[in-house]
Image (cartoon, rainbow, N blue to C red; front, side, top):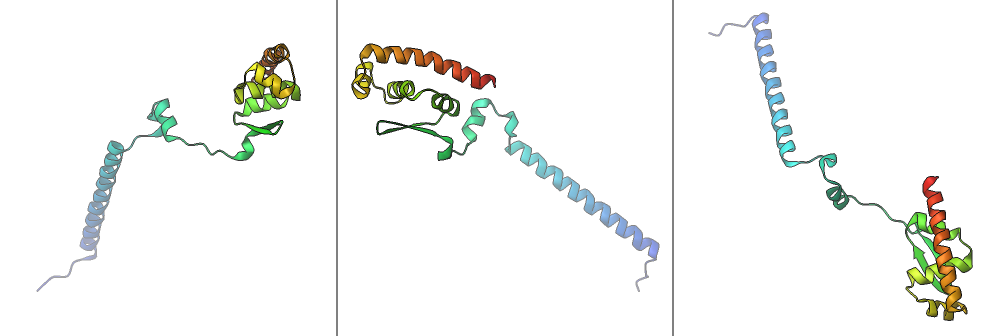
Length: 141
């Protein structure tokens, strides 16, 4: 015949059971955390080159600056450069765009824009210094 347990004994058994369950849950949690630490790396512990390999930046068409030079559409994806180019006068901007984005030489640009070679060279040189000043202003703002 089984004797009935008193309320105090039942409470002690329940207390023991709950403590064992809690201890097991804590040990399981620690074990899972240890496995995770062994297999995973935090993003801030990666080198800059590793972070660049794993990162992604969304690119949208409205972020680009596009310029039309006598029927040729030239798209500039660099925001600061595109902003500085848009602040230049059209005739100076065309020389820079054709020279550096369409890789035309001074003679080809001169034929395209009906200008002399020396005029194209002069505009390109002066425009580059203006462009540099504009970009420095944007960086300093």
